[in-house]
Length: 211
Ligand SMILES: N[C@@H](CCC(=O)N[C@@H](CS)C(=O)NCC(=O)O)C(=O)O
Figure 1 (cartoon, rainbow, N blue to C red):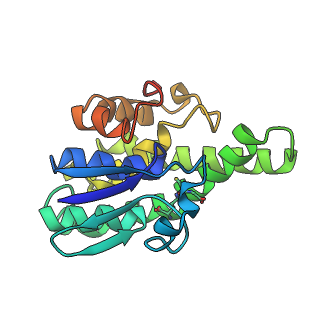
Figure 2: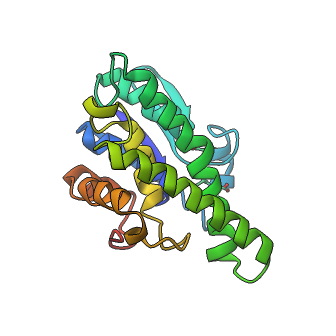
Figure 3: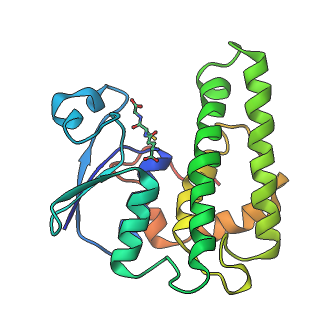
């Protein structure tokens, strides 16, 4: 059994999607980061940086933070959605690409383009440009392969699960998915997975998944 501390954001949704894909039982503990729940004394005692998502594994009696490592931990523990053959490294390198490029850059793009438009033209242009560079990289990869990692033999993995919820925020970073047809093909395929439909709306329904 697991506890999931989360809120409907891309980093939170990565983990709820994997928990649904693995068909695991888990308690959902909403941390309303818009109201400041992440700064409560109770949450601070389990989170060094006041951020969701966090899981608690009741069997091992440990808290785990950082969405990338949470995905690795669960995928390894249940032996699913992470290759055990030579493709493992490729899955992990795309996962790390998400953690180091997609998340931080799209996060900045949302900050300037969606939450604070008009405050810094330079920053809006900069993060829009790098965002589109990231989409080009992803589109090139998905031109060649069905899923992000593993090449021709690749399957749906935690690398796809990490990237997908950020692409679901394409309107916030002002990207039209029609401009990236292979990303759009991949996005729709993953959108149709029942576990994704369920995991997206954890801890509550916020919006229909944008298409
Ligand atoms: N590197 C962390 C980032 C987590 C993160 O940025 N969480 C955001 C929501 S997506 C958050 O909790 N923000 C609240 C705050 O910073 O006060 C991860 O991937 O888990």
